[in-house]
Length: 293
Image 1: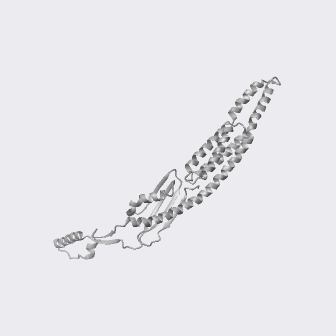
Image 2: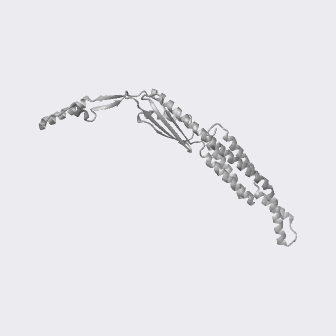
């Protein structure tokens, strides 16, 4: 199945607790599989699991993953009181009061404002439980992304097959025209020689040799056959249910090579124009497969 490398997926956990997650995944075309993962620092130990879970469903593309943890309650937070630090602050304040004989305005709120006397401490989370909820949201978002890539892939498939069929039509026209190229060259050569010799005798053996040399140089039968073969390979590859982007890229390179050879060998203007049109459709296919997984 043809899959595009462009897509987007989003999912939100159903549980409204500290393990509720919003996961968004987007992808664009890339030569390899490249990840960019943004998630809470407290969950960084799960990054490799996130990467492996997505790799099971996606083989190629630049993947951006955004994970937000939605906190609906504060049961996971503790208020911590540092007694030793508070005692030190109090002793210093009392020393200042006695040394400088100032009014005693020491209060609970004053001591509590000093750094690290009162702090919030987050309870250590059960990462296995966290992963269960995160993985569910991750799979749902990834499946949504994959479905969008499949839908985009169907459009690419239609365009590629359409352009492939147009190349076949042009190639058939070249096949019809190619056999007459050598005969036309022979007639032109005879007429030119007659003009130069002013109706004198023409060495038929020499003419035949010149025509044979021209026919050998201008023959494009092999290129036509190979281009037909590449078109068949292209169609067969599009039906494979696995990542095919790199294979398609190689096939299109070979198609372009055959078209270039045909153009360089041809001296017939009509065949040259047909070949130029073929190269134009090959380029369209090349652009389309750049976004295929």
